[in-house]
Length: 352
Image (cartoon, rainbow, N blue to C red; front, side, top):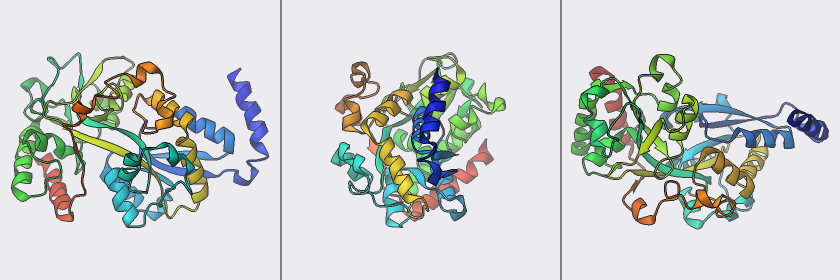
């Protein structure tokens, strides 16, 4: 019955889609970060397909975005990236004029995307762990940075110049945005001591799909909704086919809170189509469906009203303000700090 419905929709839209036959939008996005059902609905409605290009770190995304040959139309950036790429003219300014869906998003979320993105999902950086292999559950960044002997070669870190420094800097009681030499040296010392316990410095969602690594990752740095239950944890459990196998912990020292922004590139030759797709994704119905499919907290006020009561009232998805108050937020790092952080990352393999 579903197949017949798809055929009917296809036939009904064939004529109106003739002008856009074979038209494709290139979307640069994290893996498993958008509901495939929504993409199917969009393509059935418009005849325009979406080609997803996945990245597994902000640095990798930036390299792809800087290559004009990749013809990127849409991209997921963090709030700092929205400011930086917007200032450089790489992504398109957005307002209710060219993106009406923005009217459903609170001013504070829109401000965080700096007028260059649709507020998408938000959450935290924390510790992912296999509940069958790691006991007791990790409660501190110390559990990751100074791990138990049994975790040797069972940790997945994340070689991004921002996120990989969250655990050592939080453990040191420093700012996640620290750029002074003594603090970065102290963070490097912790990362160097941890290195023999690290199996891979690739993003855990990417690493878990490598048969040589999958069964050996017990603890990982990753993303989730505010307190877990969603995000990377949801993806890992889905790929493992075991609900509850992977769990998520926000360490007691606090962590980084993040917001992702959905942007249109300024150089897109299909800019109007890209704006139409973004407006579709940002609509209340689509934003709600996306949040439910990914178990992530939506930034859309209108979509929030469409979520099940159980989801809206779940403190693991929408936590109390006092809990979120402990977390830090990214600020723009200096070029000197980014270069120093990347130099540190490039040396870590020497200590594994």
